[in-house]
Length: 247
Image 1: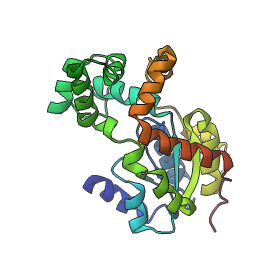
Image 2: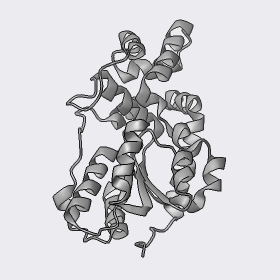
Image 3: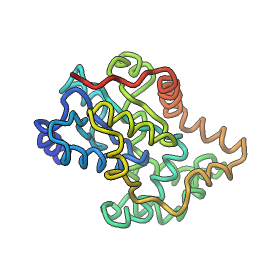
Image 4: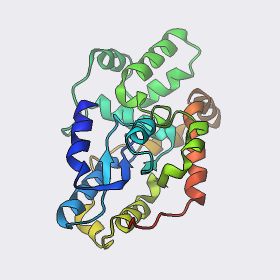
C-alpha cells in the first residue's frame, strides 16, 4: 500500500480529484492505466482520473475522497481467475510480475494449468480440494477478487452514488470513450495512447467454454460471493449513464 499511496500522492496534484480509475486485476487495466498516463502527459489541464492500483479498495478510496466517482472494468469471475492463474504461473512475464512467493511455488507444484486447479476446487478428492483452496489463498492475484474490492452487493448499494463508468471488458472501447469524455479530450487520442498490454496467447474464455454446464454451475457456487457482486455490477452497467465531464 505504501508504494501505491506514494504514486497516488504524486498524481494527486496532476489529475482530477473528482474521478479515479480502479485497476481490478486481469480486466485490461494495465493498458487503460497507460492510456490515462499518456493523455495526462500530452494534454495540459486534462481532467484525467487518478489511477489506483490493486492495493486500493472502494472503502479505502472513499476514506480519502467521499465524493469521488470510481470507474473500472469488470470481467466474468471464472475468466478473471483463469487469467490471474496464468499470469502468476508464468511469473508475470514478460516483465512486471514479481517472482513466486513460497506459497505460490507450492501451489504451482500441485497445479500446472488453470484447468487442473479449477476442477480440483470441485473434486471429490479431499487432498486435491485442499490443495486447490491453498492455491486460492496463496496466489495473490487470485485473492484480489470482487469481494476484496467491493465487499458485497449490500455495500455497493450504499456507495452507488460513487460508482461511475462500469463496463465489461468486452466493451473496453466504450470505457475508453467515456474516459476521454470525463477527461475532456478528443476520443481520437485512443488510437495514439491505447494498446492492449501483456495479452496472453491462451484465451481464458476458451477454458470456460470447455466446462460442462454442471462443472460451471459448481464453480459458480464456489465463487458465489464474487458472482453476487459481479451480477450487481453488470446490472448497474446496463442501467447507469456515463457521467458528464466535471466542471
